[in-house]
Length: 302
Image (cartoon, rainbow, N blue to C red; front, side):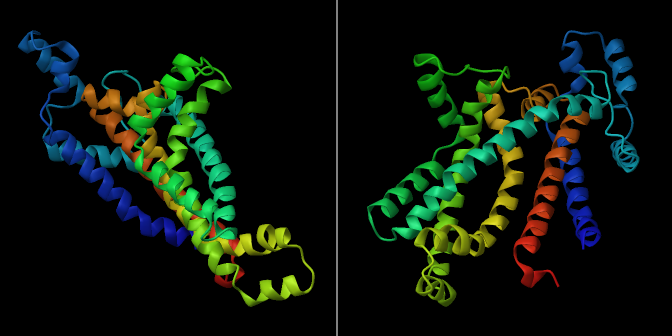
């Protein structure tokens, strides 16, 4: 099953690589002029262009890039003068750390909020959770991040303003990145749990004297979480792409800030490598969600 899924996703990755390559070369801007400056001599520009392989026909550059990918070679960064794989590998742990803690924040907020909203359906707590979810979904990262910085870093001085130094530096970026996901998950869990709580087997459990807390948190929650697992898998990949904005706001040294600097510097191989890593993150997240769903629901294992 895993092999079939991976093979079916190869065309998607190929399409991403092709589109990114085409768009990069269609966007105005010369990497050579960015590196040497517009006042550099024409001879120096031609030498650097030949050194970077930019003097070759576009189709030859494309086929060469695909050939390198087939052997695990992402190319060589124009700016860092190092293999793209090494540059990204140095930044990837920071992005994975941020995405991981953002997921923890999202789950820690969404599950209690979703369960309480379902149990108190139609009451004040349910309406309050709906408002909180709408606010969480509506707030963009580039607005929420600076707001948290002003409140908790500038005024209260509880957390660092930017950078990645110690556990406290990940708190505000993780909250910024995980808030929207928490809002989505809480509403999904609430809707799913409301349906599950009406099931006959839960009524039978209550008749046998099982406590309401055990009915909700043990029996109902596992079945209600099945569709939520799918949403988590889909949104987990978006954490990697959403981290681009969050990393820029907090100067977090991850793949997101690396991608932005590569775009500004017209570092074609590095941009392509960063986008490829993010797209592979989507693929891996969807595959993990599928496996988790099969584990949680025995009906789809066969």
